[in-house]
View (tube, one colour):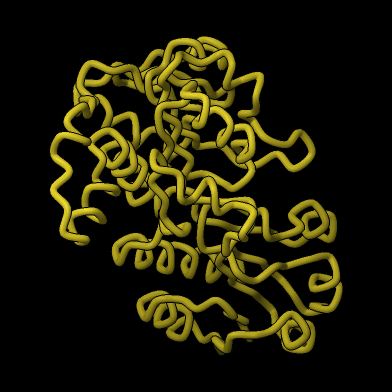
Length: 301
């Protein structure tokens, strides 16, 4: 069967698909080219770049499966696809370790000024005095909004660092390690670090806005390696400027690539930023590609 893979797949994943007898088209496509290429495809595998809209689904009259190598499905019209009887597959756990490690990395970066001191030292400065008041993660409270695959990996690492971990997620039951499952309000009011691991609800909007920020401790640290828009960027900038939020680590933005309107947030002295690279490790990419290939093969039997 013909499988369209416009965003690419690792050699290991491609090998599995080819060995299963499938013909792969791994050409990067414009939205217009996608509408033409999808006509002959029985399957499509995307990452975050390609959008599988209602129009694309309608054009893919031979489609039997739609797959996303990754966690979120916000670039796929899932409801419409399922309404047409098309299975929509993803790999929610394959990149969990990589995203969790990045979230912890941002916590260290803003707590010990790693992002700022490295830049200033390259300019010939020695800012020891300026950055002499870092904070430890040890004995701090880590609050998790979302306790799926990624949230659990962050929790493991937080516990290993000697943090008290609390989480809110109505979809998950307690695990066999020391995490306090509690209300969203309790997390917001008591956590020193808050890490987001929830999908974006496009209808409800930001899960963290001014009202939620006002509930938090003064000096809280916010980490968003989930989805752009989960945290209201304008409200976060205001909270950083007022000192309500001590620092933030951000991997995801409402606009990607970011626009000039987001410049003040990205360049803020107490913000550590990365360009949506949470799942971008060699290990995660291999796991994602292999897992999504296996799922597509099973779906096309």
